Image 1 (cartoon, rainbow, N blue to C red):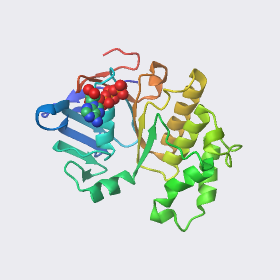
Image 2: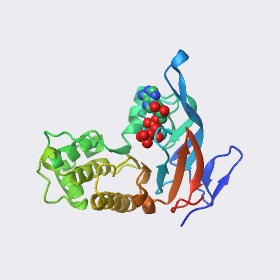
Image 3: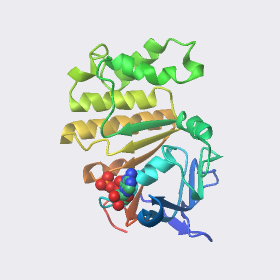
Image 4: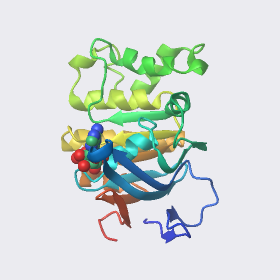
Length: 251
Ligand SMILES: Nc1ncnc2c1ncn2[C@@H]1O[C@H](COP(=O)(O)OP(=O)(O)OP(=O)(O)O)[C@@H](O)[C@H]1O
């Protein structure tokens, strides 16, 4: 069901009837690429709150700024103008060290899944746990194995990434993003290279694991077939969040 939105005093897109603090809060965010004469503004006055456990899909034409906004929220590039709070931490103008701390709490699933091809599925997933001190004393092989089983890859655990299909690789990428139980998952076109069935499987798994783990998902896609997994759909155009749309594309 589409949730109603309201415009508060700062014209922020927000969900009504919630007393929670947002896990992602974007306020008057602008972003520019380049400097001097080559400086180009690509994001204009972005205002957005996303709450714990929500699955939010961001759509919009090519070049409208979706990936740029996703990478800013993910601490992969640094915002300079406006406010951007992620998990309670202000990351606009944050130091590299602060950005790294925020990044550790986020799972990333990108179209080019960036698996290390000379490692097995289990080793790829395990690597993500090795970044977290709290897992070093746990049985990381078992955790990686359990997560691969939960994405339906119980029979591919010791296969090298190179020998997996596109859909299987993407499921390894999901396992890798979720194994450390991040509070936020950011996904950029996770189904772009997949056929209809594999794409459906991938988003169904993301949706199930997110609900089980209570994590928030922000997902960028051009794939209209997966819009139904969203609690909320937002639309970007020419660097602006223009509207919140219904799941069937209606306003
Ligand atoms: N590193 C960069 N340097 C300069 N301009 C860039 C850079 N990355 C993106 N842009 C520009 O910023 C704008 C937004 O790009 P962005 O990749 O965020 O769009 P998008 O909506 O994700 O597009 P797509 O759907 O094609 O992935 C585009 O005009 C793009 O050309």
